[in-house]
Image 1 (cartoon, helix red, strand yellow):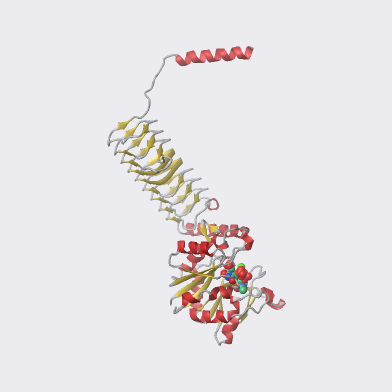
Image 2 (image 1 turned 135 degrees about the vertical axis):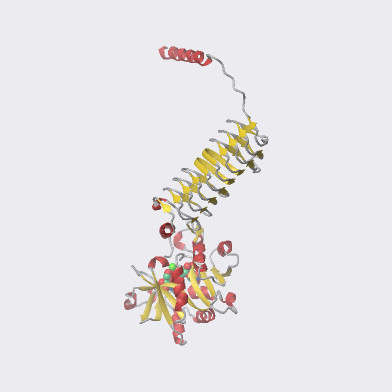
Length: 449
Ligand code: UD1
Ligand code: CA
């Protein structure tokens, strides 16, 4: 069965108090819209249609960044959820299969729930996702008779008796795509809010002799975001969920609550993550690697057996091969560290390639930027870079070469060579003693006077 996703993302999100459209606010470094699109991906949809409206250009760009094939339709005026769904009609022309309506601001619907909805379609023409609300508040209520859904009533239009119902409408619905388009086009705005309500399709479907049913999910899955506080709550929920999932997959987290992941963080079994580690987007950590405390990683790949931190920073393009070590106060950006490379202390490695087994001394800096252009540093295998070496790129240090501590290396170093780029030492016997005596005498005279 082919499935089309319709993701509603036209709303402004007034309560966010923001210039940014609501669905572009981020959870774990990804716009909420991406979370909703990713949730829908588990159904392997044949089409994804995003309904944009408020700041439609930005929303369309974000949708295409996630899925270049996504079809974006514009709802010029936000006249209600049924009106929003109806905008998808041109993109469903000739489509055979089911449609499911998801929401850009409801990012956490699970795969199990989506699959249950797809299965329930065998029994009902229209399937609505409902949940038992701890506080039903202003949610729409599901009016049921046995396992049949008879109608959905919006809070504003509900009687006291209907308001007492605790099974609420999540807003997620599924039906045959053409049936759904027929139903939404029949919805009117004759209600308390003067809006075209998507939930009204249940009544219309039943009048047409179609059946409607409910699938239930946990309230946490239907968590919607309307304010900054709810966004922070969604972030917490996401982090807790991902921590639990990673641990279930065999990742060691010593203090899970202190580790923050990005939406796409991937970590292998038996990797160890110490407390207070922060992951930005685009990080993969292979099995058995160890990320020590207070490290910050973003756009980086850490191979098996590598050790990072404590207090390390891996920036985009950091590629650490097996058994490499990046220690405290080391920053790596757009650089490849070969197998067993060690850069253990106080170092900046940017735009560099470092061959297997090389040792990078404390305080080494790749001077990669001339104020206008970036340049690369290449270090061969088994090289030894002395402490406090400045590698002025572009520059190459050959296999098995050495640089003396404190060197400023501006010219290529041949394989096996030792390069010294520092002033020759001058030693003056007894000079320090005489200097001290003179200075102390001067101070004594000043204190007396
Ligand atoms: C809706 C449901 C309600 C349900 C609740 C669950 C309707 C009429 N009511 O109410 O039964 O309990 O969700 O959260 O559907 N949107 C558009 N275009 C529009 C209108 C809305 O894209 O013209 C989008 C909004 O951006 C939002 C979503 O649809 O993401 C829901 O709309 P909203 O107005 O928030 O509906 P609720 O009042 O929450
Ligand atoms: Ca809402």
